[in-house]
Image 1 (cartoon, one colour):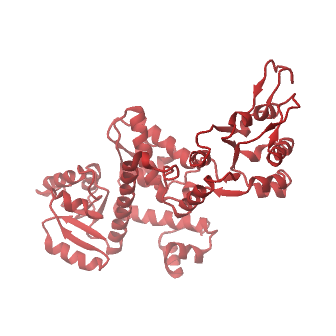
Image 2 (cartoon, helix red, strand yellow):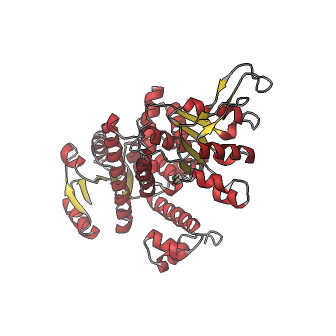
Image 3 (tube, helix red, strand yellow):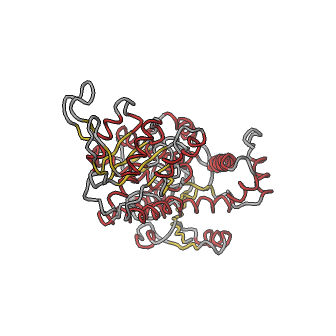
Length: 449
């Protein structure tokens, strides 16, 4: 990892570089050395105590570096746990702070997080610069390996006419993926018709899908085209397919098998030429086991299944998505916000996002609308982040923040692996004995263990 430092203490940083090890390369730089400060993974800026005569000059140097939008994230090296000085550094735009009396392992954690943030912001900038050259699947932001594998399979399926089943929790972007498949297919110039099956009353859904003739039932005063007919040779997207009644499942199965349908009240058979993409947030296999969903329809729909992972399982994408939504919402609402504060970003990274990407988008839109300055802060986030507001107001020390982060990380991993400590330790890339020691040191309650 290449790191620059802006500080007069060359001997101090020379020793620091030796202690960090060969994995880290420390180089001296000046606050106005734009080339060197943009060609590194993190920047260390020495910041003496607030009472020190050099503090204003060092803080101004930090602000100058941060004003360069292409510069690497800045970590303020403070001489003591001076909360006032640390708050001033964060307010000036520092990504994080490190107390010089801390351990080398703590500094490595801070530098790795800063470098990861640097990597993600570079990717966001690259994606934005590519603009209209993005393929439909590249436009669905995400760096998670599982998600990219889904996009790779979807891009192959798009060129065919195969029926696709998209599964995943609510808010994971199932309709966005369906639209991307359509736009990447030979039918891209044809209509894309989306139907929310769960929002249509049982008495109307057959007419909604297949249409009706005049006089087919009370209130049918004119001929009406259904959604299958409106889709033509394009794509029909049936969302929440698991909510269909058994009677409608039989009728849909017939349409898929025979590739034809009739309007209600008509004997004229019409060809069904549209491609069918279905989506559900329910487990269809469990519904089949309980006979709530037809097995033959399940196999007919499940030619290719694409499962979108929830946002909590791809936390590295939270930073990427949050900044993308920030830019979109700021432009849409003509608001000044252009940055996200470190504590607000850290709080969002730690949140479990039960509403997935849709919830993150709503949170960012709300924050952009109510923020009057250039930076989204913790107080601009909704009530579910109230605990982080209290922590920010208390000005927790760096050591406390690291300890809290470790506790949350271990608790989340234990829950993810069903309290299997061996699997949790492998996921965290630490020895099982180290995990046991951390559980004790961090006072993780037995109910979580």
